[in-house]
Amino acid sequence: KIFTSPDQLTTTTYDFVIVGGGTAGSVLANRLSEVDNITVLVIEAGIDNKDILPVQVPFLGVTLPGTSVDWNFTTTPQTGLNNRVIPYTRGFVLGGSSSVNLLTFNRGSDDVWDRWADLTQDAGWSWDSVQQYYLKSSRLVPPADNHSTLRQVDPTVHGNGPVEVSVPGFPLPIDDIVVSASKQLGGRFAFNEDFNSGNFVGVGFMQSSVGGGERSSAATAYLEPVENRTNLDILINTRATKLVQSGKSGYTPIFQKLEIAQSNTSTPIEVCARKEIILAAGVIGTPQLLLLSGIGPPSAFKNSSIKPLVNSPDVGLNLVDHPLVPNYFSVSSNGTWDDVLRNGSILNATLGEWIGARQGLFVDSPGNTLAFMRLPPNSSALEGISDPAAGPQSSHTELIFVDGFAPFGTVPQPSTGNFITVLTNVVSPTSNGSVTLASDDPFDKPIIDPRILTSDFDIQAMVQAINDAQTFLASSSWQAEFKPVPFGDLATATTDEAKAAFARNNSVTVNHPGGTARMSPYGAPWGVVDSNLRLKMALGVRIVDASVFPVIPECHIQGPVYIIAERAADLIKAAYGLIPGQNTTSPDTCN
Ligand SMILES: Cc1cc2nc3c(=O)[nH]c(=O)nc-3n(C[C@H](O)[C@H](O)[C@H](O)COP(=O)(O)OP(=O)(O)OC[C@H]3O[C@@H](n4cnc5c(N)ncnc54)[C@H](O)[C@@H]3O)c2cc1C
Image (cartoon, rainbow, N blue to C red):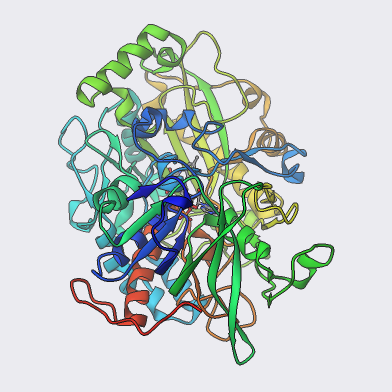
């Protein structure tokens, strides 16, 4: 059941309390409440996801930042971006960021997972071990227009889970050009039939969390189908404000209790978890809640009223994100969708096609094709550092090809003309930032400083990506009809130095942050959780969301979050001997 106020709960004691009904939280809510007599409470700060048209329509995802489904965070002035402050979108809605994201669905290269296994000294995170969780979380479905997907995707590498994944359902004129340029140029631009086969290098078709032309999110795939289970309560519009120490085991604090509130003027209510409190509040919400509870580096509590309870030096650190630069090109073809965003009647007709039959441009997020690219081996960006990518199947940069003027940056769409956009991203960044408290008020926004483009590697890799985009567009496949010409400030950025300046002026983020409660080997002094995702130096708390990434994956990251959450559900079930369909007598109590 979904409740909108804590007064509606008939109990305040559950087996598991999950903080955050987002991507990972929804998976856990589903998988843990599979066990009949296990009770689960989900606390979600945001709103219900149902009946919000721009959440459902894939193309309209780009309009969600700044609306009621967004936490509306911003960064600190970013020194790598000429002190610009940029929006930092996070889902404030059931399904969390999977309800507001731009839908690209990747599972990460095999190398990503094998590196995690090395870093955590736990083979349970290797690809061989987590593959089952990838297969359990998503499945390939036909594209909205049902076209033949031969050579666009390899059905044999996909699974049978609830998240629906498909290739674009509204082919666009540039799709064939991208494929033909890839085949023409080969080498670093070689065609890759399916990134989700584990090799994230080359040019290929976008796969997105879209089924039947609609967004498939953690809320639609995992939460909605089970929201009427009698052992699952979902409380929305309510924040977890503090973990409360409920006892000690030797010197180790136990946290079984959690304060929740609907505003900073309402009296908090305490809920209790007989077995565990699971933090799935995301890469900003999770470290904020830990810090509000006195769990973090001692320095965080120096001038604060918060009593330090657990010395956990890494909480809120290692915030790593993928930077994104929109590169605009004017084109000679009118085969772009620019007029859809300029002309109300075309927009309404396009929306009508979606509403009437789940067909047309709006069945996809902008960008039907993309490239994941490794830097040339002799790149100066790699001189003197160890390669930041996880291995040869992981890339350093990404190019997304959009058949129109993609409204991702600060440059407004021109009122006339046809454009394409190449979004250039650095997917193995080495810049590293933080989330810290602005105050001890849980309703205050925290201080978010991702330090985008502050490392030499990141800026040099971004310049290489901008150059790669232009090399690709110079091929005869592109020059035959579209004839792309750099537009705006990109037109005058003809040297690497000027391109670096262009990147600093125009970069935003792909919204892929991770790492603020990273996992590390059991017993290691660094890291916030162990490789079973249990909060270190405390009992009763596990963390399951993008904050536990030990290092950022070189891909879009919702797929890895689903994998983490599916594996976490099995780790938790194993820890308590929980078997779906079987009753478990629980000796645990709330103290
Ligand atoms: C605009 C945007 C575009 C993106 N595009 C893509 C993409 O195309 N492909 C891709 O793979 N990834 C994309 N991502 C990233 C991806 O969606 C996220 O990394 C992933 O969904 C994060 O999952 P999570 O479980 O860690 O957190 P979330 O899904 O964000 O869940 C956290 C939940 O906790 C709730 N919460 C936070 N604090 C509290 C609290 N104190 N009390 C109660 N509830 C709380 C939040 O409201 C939220 O519902 C994008 C993200 C954004 C924002």
